[in-house]
Length: 137
Ligand code: ZN
Image (tube, rainbow, N blue to C red; front, top):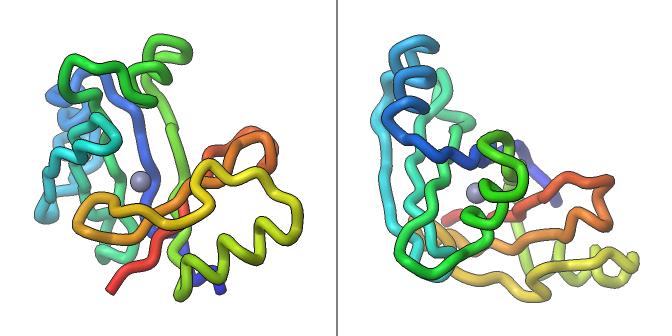
């Protein structure tokens, strides 16, 4: 079952400029979490929004190999990259979506930032929006 929007992923080319906006202009001064996610070839910076029920995830390419965020930036420039929905059982949700004929980027969950189980649904099946599923705990 889908519980809530967990975070909104934003591809950024210039992290200091992005922080000028999110922290200085919008005033989102809560505790940030920064992590290199080797499997996705990114540095992720999480910024809590208000009460911490939802966050922005600023995504920057990391390392010399070209990952999906590098390709996204080259093709479309900075902007909204994905919406992440939290589910109480990611494997059950993936199985259900597969049974409904949706195209999945990940048929099974993998390890994402902060050790959460994550998987992506292909934009072909969502009307053009990259959706990430996440199971916390
Ligand atoms: Zn994400």
